[in-house]
Length: 82
Image (cartoon, rainbow, N blue to C red; front, side):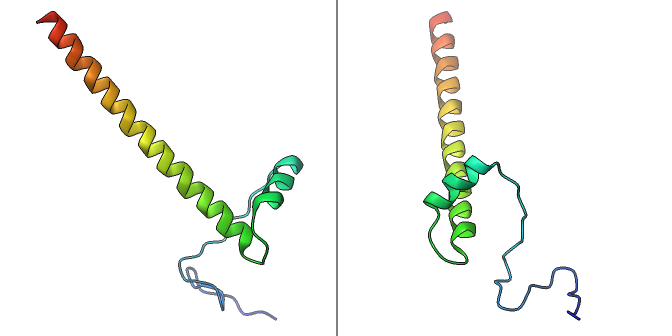
């Protein structure tokens, strides 16, 4: 019988900062995922992790640019009024 792990205790051989997340995707998305993820036991998790980090970086950059545009438009509006 397998022993129970204490909450927060990692499985043997697994990085301590790794977290198990079960997700459900549709069949077409799984096909695309298998096409792009690297081979190997840990390839899919690493691939999804990289996708998430890249998406987050793009979203942060988009937010930074939007804030800059809003700031420039506000300055231009104030300049035109004054």
